[in-house]
Length: 431
Image 1 (tube, rainbow, N blue to C red):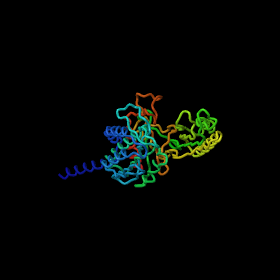
Image 2 (cartoon, rainbow, N blue to C red):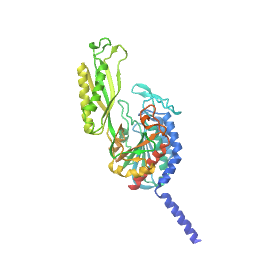
Image 3 (cartoon, rainbow, N blue to C red):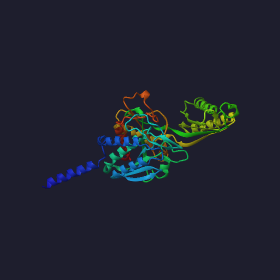
Image 4 (cartoon, rainbow, N blue to C red):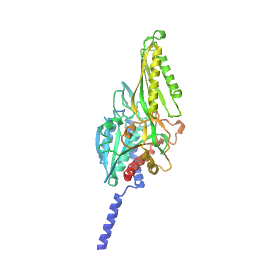
């Protein structure tokens, strides 16, 4: 009888020990597969109900509800509409964060999906159609999936996992604050103190592919606003005023020449884009005012300063030549997204567990920008791309992020969930 009791006690001890062991890759994979239907459902719901930056009220409420049901400590209203969830593991250890952005874009959806957006919302004085054209709906859904998997392994986690659901990554409306900077200011990295953070972004790359690079990865960006004050006149008498269309055309052409001929294109990539030109209300009236907006993308502080100086001087000179007053102002700066060298050095084998044979740690520079860079200014950070292009779509014609046709293969969500969970667990285990 004694031997039998001892055997039962030993078996119980072994089971208890196994239960407390670090989760295996197979366990993570099985849990990610199990939660995949919920991830797809979350994504489709969020996609059908998109919200612009600093307006993510419905999305934030959904996130908070799901996190509370999983047993996370939840803080709402962080950085306006952001949500922070905290999961304390069963063992002491470091604190790792995972981040997803929640905001959509003022884009009219043309995907034809059964859950396509029909939403409109106010943006900078206009009511516009809204769409998740950059995949933030998938980011939220995948991070909720990762939170679900991690909650199921809580007792085995050696440390704490913080999940950040951030508003306004695409930038807030003119005159507003928002995004990562405001989340940080509201203590998103401080309660508890985060030791490292990982982020993931979906795009039109090969499905299930994961890529990143150490050091500078995504460009820094600045919002460009050009204002020109001239003299209104009849469309039949342009010489009696300032021809704003010619001013706008000269500025655009000057920018194209500036970014291709006035800076060393081999030393560092530079993109200078004019995206909007607003002037006039009638076909035969040359207006008094012209406004142009665009974006600047650079990869180092020296190039940024150089181009800003050239742009401001060029715009002022063109205005003066036409007898107008013109100025260029740069706002909403995002720093270059830099992947921490030490973290980047060990994550490839971790990502290989999530997507075997499809990990590239020498990814090309990305001229897109990300305010995830703000977290990297405070704590070690790594940002990763996940390919989501459906197999039926050729790479050459795949709609890019911000396209009204942007869509992804939902099967890749399972890969994204695995990647986020494994990165968090491996970091905590190593630390």
